[in-house]
Length: 370
Image (cartoon, rainbow, N blue to C red):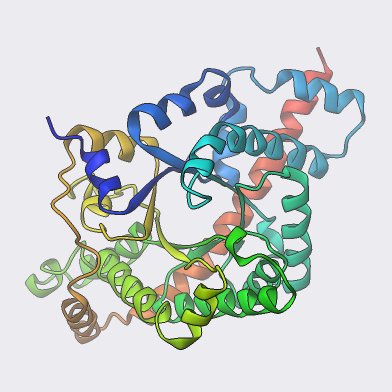
């Protein structure tokens, strides 16, 4: 019987889990996924932590300690989340060592409410890097215009960055430029470039959700024929941009100094429309030097019935451009779509952070009454 996840790994795709919880860590579930499902990394976000807090009582002892120490809410959130990330890094450490630092990574996000403030984002990235204090942590920085400067500054300081909320090819190119600039500054400052890793999290399914809504409003045969194709086409053009950026003399000079390319990471890979194959954002985005971060349902679906037929993301570039030309002919401009998605994405992250704060406060209040 074919092992689709092993086949995916063999194609150069690193499988990361888009989830973490203290229960998953306590029970050994994460270690089991490493051993049995080829998982080699973890990503997190405020919604994931909030969900984890609502399940079971794994956080109760720490909550009691935080109350006893009279820790303020926002610091409590950071102590709770960084505890899980640090533990996750320790579980992932053998993978980190075995892959020479490429994988075995666990990501934690800066406060999204400061996504439009370069200096504050940079400062928080440094603080989280120090707080988690593990070489295999990655700090998530949103790919806003203000975030670009923070990406450069964090990279220059030797911090490994997971750049999140990338929707457009233009912004992806700017993110890669910010990373290269950071590497050059790090090199000039004497930082060991071989210790720095980065991924560029390119969101996929949300593009289809927005485009398909617009196609459904048009409602003709031409519109129906291109449903569910924009997300994958956009990601393939992102991979093309990756190939062209990490080539040529500028990159060769950095690579010779020990630098590693910023790998594309396919994010938002859970299929939203039940009419589509539930593994499409995995099987259609296979290419070397990529990461696919999956919610557990997508991981299990791929293991159950995914078919990995070889590389699929490093091809079809002309067809992707033609698709966007066809969409433009229908009145749907991809640049306008991705700009909207970035704005909405940052707001959703801010909202989820607020929900996390409220959730932690409820847990603290409930524990204090016991």
